Length: 135
Image (cartoon, rainbow, N blue to C red; front, top):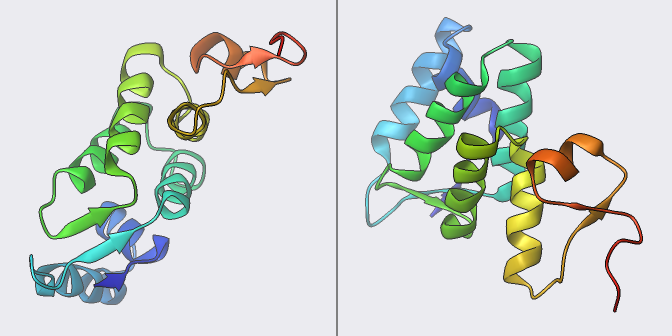
């Protein structure tokens, strides 16, 4: 298995650098079930941020690309079930992907909740205000 960094996958998503895009696409085509690519949580979040902020992609466009990665048989996503749950939260509640993934990971690790000062994360991702959860 080979780890794939954000910039390789972003090249495939946006195709903004012809030479690197061709190399990135060739690398992805070279992956197989026996020798897949690995994408970590950090890379997934970075892809989301880069597509949304640097390339001004819509939520639906960024969501579609990350979803395609989870459906690619030759790519292994770290804790894929948690990533898929986070993508579902983005789809249904318009949550930020990073916030939704934080909640999914915390839940899988038996956290009662995730507390934050971020009003949008409280409203859309299911986080709680600081001090809201009693032990």
